[in-house]
Length: 352
Image (tube, rainbow, N blue to C red):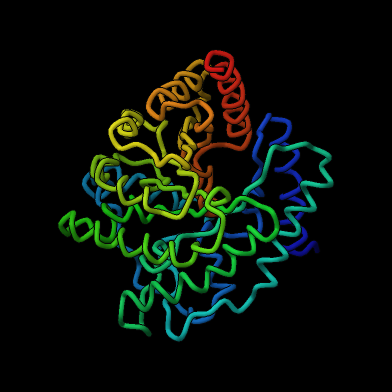
């Protein structure tokens, strides 16, 4: 029987080839070796065991009981990895398996080389310390800042390894938007913003020695189909996000709840050395965006940022944040990525 590592390696090689065929310029390994975008750290970091108390439900979903019931029934009907009940921290946290991280990176680099494809660049993801501390219950540190700092310093191993291997580092940080209507749903906005400030400070300590232009932050309101009518406004968090030690900011700007917030970047501009990765593809629907729609979204982002050279096109989020949780079929996902490429070419011809 083929081992899991071999299957993950083969899947990584396949997604690299398919990204090239779709016209993607900046490749990713698709997180094929991970069961979920942040749960995988329990295999690499010491201190985690058992299960946490199940996380609170998303407040926007619970506000619509019929929809909440249908959503739960949908996921209960198929095998998947749940992000809702991760382990708890019961002892000191440290990175104890750098070899697993290195193996994932080296397999990614091998897949890039063996594909024969010419990509402009490549990136690998790692989670924000804030999403880990928000999800994994603390039964050891009993001090929020100490817990956050321990996680950020442990994850620093993966942050530095990405850069050392020549990859762009993308920090996936849904905590910097989503936790407002999850952990902090019943608390004042100022309490949530203090949490964001603490995560930004911890991240900056972990990223401080790395080149800003090789780091980008992905912030989203949760990659799930839901009402999202309790999402925090981008205007509330963007000033804090701009303080991050990162050259790039990836924002969800394709979904129906946040498309209009592209304009926020006019009033709260990026720093001169920062660029925007504008989400122009919604990974939660099986609609294949028309290339003209993609081009229009890119053009709106350029109008807000003011410089086409500082705008890249991307997806709002991954198509599957945990194994089995995605709603978009694989064939449609690849078609959406091809549409993103076609739309980017249209926009580029108009803008340059």
